[in-house]
Length: 302
Image (cartoon, rainbow, N blue to C red; front, side, top):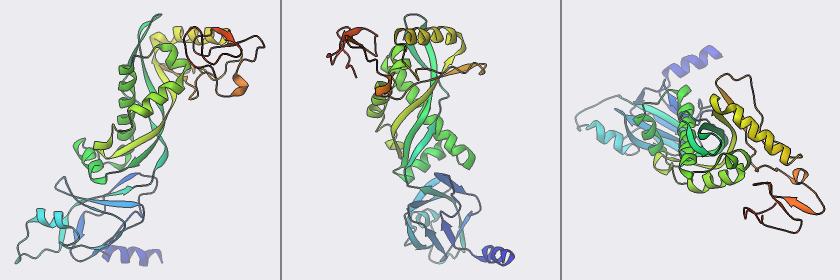
């Protein structure tokens, strides 16, 4: 049965978009190098098929069944500049299959370092890593972005997008001029800033991201010891503080600092419960138990 199916596939010139995509968000079909005139392209639900001719995006097909002709692929046939007397059987193309569903836990990493100022260490360099929601909203623009960056290898597409998002996040962190304490102990405010200011950044590239969550920050080796001291000091000020940082000393060049996405105190179990006062989680100042904002830094007390 397997041999018969293979023989049928050999002579079958129809193309089904989405059958091979698997876990890929964007899949370049290496085997479908030609479109055969009057055969069919079948596009599954929640997929798009992008037709590229001579490295130019021509037509985008949404879910449905299409006969390969000038009516269904007008841009492709227009670029071919066919005369009425010309007869061809196939057109060389590149086909990209795109999953238009949202990916909730797309992992981003950074290649470029952000730079923030620290009173104790001067300029501190690091790279943020984490997850975000990802969805392609304009298939044509998305493929143009990949072609411009010469990225059509299926094994490299996700890596390219991951680095693109991570480097953009690091650039935004640098421009925001936050301090080292905010980065280490107030992940929630950073994530709020990133989700607010980066929501339209990638529209022209054909995708959007949301629900950015920073899971770790890789700092330069020369700052590792001082950062550990800052974290240890914060833990001594607030004894019940948990999940501020976890240092992996087995890493030779960089140390990932685990940043809580909910700030320094993730839930009610971490809050200091003292009858006469409550500590501000941003600066550690004592406040009246009924206070809602810190008398020292003015931030909200949770």
